[in-house]
Image 1 (cartoon, rainbow, N blue to C red):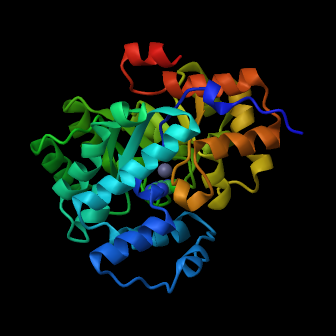
Image 2 (image 1 turned 180 degrees about the vertical axis):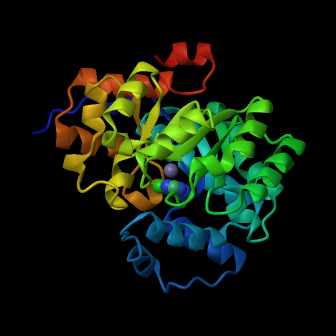
Length: 326
Ligand code: ES4
Ligand code: ZN
């Protein structure tokens, strides 16, 4: 019998979550039917058979294809509500979620539809689910920096309720240095800054995100392991790394969960947290990520509490909310 500390005793924040990555197969079929969209899969099993990935791109192909069912504000709202319900059950008390506006704009879905659909539910997340929340607009690094700048301008013009910007999608060959003007624009607007770096890309991209984009937090960052001086810097400056164990395993960013660097980074005093990334695609939510970590590495209560605490200190929540959760 495995002794389990109830996760409910560890309130945590989820800092690395793509809301479109919470779109479960059942909801994909429901939204397709509602919107009169014919799916290229006969049934749930046929769709589920596609969830085997060899790298980031093989996942992104399915992730973007499945978004096709998101057409109306209600679709975005229903997806967001389903996530918050599941996250609350996982012990999440605060979430900073990313949305990919460009992935919808290219399909002819407006910024208003996507942002208002998600934001309408985030506005009541505390009252309805006991989860405080914030929204981060993520930009697709495999599309042009000019397009990203235009979308950010539109978001600012419409007063979109975003607290920050992020950078995601295909990493290798699309370095942070390409997005310096975008991050300057966001910083000038008072937004927080995060970026995926060192997921599949080299450790040098993590340094670029810190030195050129001036990010507050790194999403993933696991490739810092290739550069001991960088690991030391991340520890010294307490740069939060939002780690996603099941994602890294499913996308083969690590050879196996057993070889995941999270325990080493935790041991070395870095601010690492546990996150689900795209839970509908990678085999689980935050509680599932904690469960596999605990089973694989036999983490003790102090280590689990440190991970949960890091998620709160690494968040952009107001000081009073952090005090409540710590
Ligand atoms: C993503 Cl796991 C991951 N990496 C990069 N971009 C993404 N967008 C959604 N999930
Ligand atoms: Zn991600």
